[in-house]
Amino acid sequence: MSPDRSRLHIAIQKSGRLNDRSRQLLRDAGLKLSEAGRNQLTTRADNFPLDLMLVRDDDIPTFVADGVCELGIVGQNVLEEYALGQAAPRFEEVARLGFGSCALKIAAPESLDCFTLSMLAGQRIATSYPRLLQRFLVQEGIEAEIVTMRGAVELAPRLGIARFICDLVSTGATLEANGLAPVAEVFHSEAVLVRSLKPIDAAHAEKARALLMRIEGVIATAEAKYIVLNAPEAAISEISAILPGAEAPTVVPLVGRPGHFAVQAVCQESVFWETLERLKAAGASAILVMPIEKMML
Ligand code: PRT
Ligand code: ZN
Image (cartoon, rainbow, N blue to C red):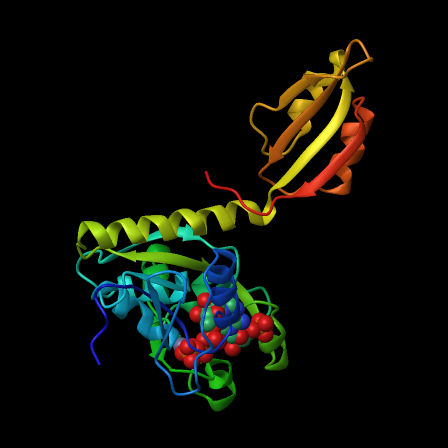
């Protein structure tokens, strides 16, 4: 079945760690998504010309590079491993999505004391990311043997396949359960939105631009808050400096309270209780923090 070329296509993971958050992001961007059956490769948005291709995460770079999908959501680890095997760039990262965070780390047996990178020289290291590991070893000037495994990398030392491993880590529980400890970080990763570099026609490009604008709006509102507070004139510059990630707050005079103003601002960064305490200490009162539902930058 060839894809319907009147619609945009986005490749997302069919099932796994990135599936839920990828769908949620598209829903937050206002798309009504049909539920996909277990064996379905595609599903569509009912209110936007977009088809979702549901695939294994490892296939997403190929789908986007070949232009089968104009867009994709995938971990930087998978993307960079693929890109290192290509002669020229075939896609570009357009947004970091703030989920799926993990790090590719080299791990050693816990029993090994005082690890230094030079201990890797001449050793075998098992990994599913041979190109990322190779790049790291070259950068560090270390010659070691890379053993490529598709999965269950953490078992390699126990099976006698390799002394060291290089695998994705989030909580570290898997390493610990296998008597291993992280010793060096090779690559930090999170889920990203990528765009194909294959040329598309103007109508298609316009649809992609509209979708990207909505997604950027969703990302921007994820942390953003709207803050309203009252302050005496003398405190306004100090208060403005405390407001996290806010540009040019609106300052309006308060009726019946000469010398006092209402300050309103969109804060692009997290607003913590500590922030409110600092604002209060600087002279702010009646501080309100409100979520922002939609934002177009
Ligand atoms: O079927 P498909 O090929 O699509 O899925 P998959 O099994 O290859 O990938 P999946 O769903 O496990 O992960 C998808 C993406 O999530 C990865 O490519 C990363 O970008 C991201 N991610 C975030 C992780 C982890 N955290 C993670 N912890 N991917 C894998 N892990 C594994 C890791 O390989 C190790 O086995 O979890 C284990 C370690 O976890 P901790 O918490 O014990 O440290
Ligand atoms: Zn995979």
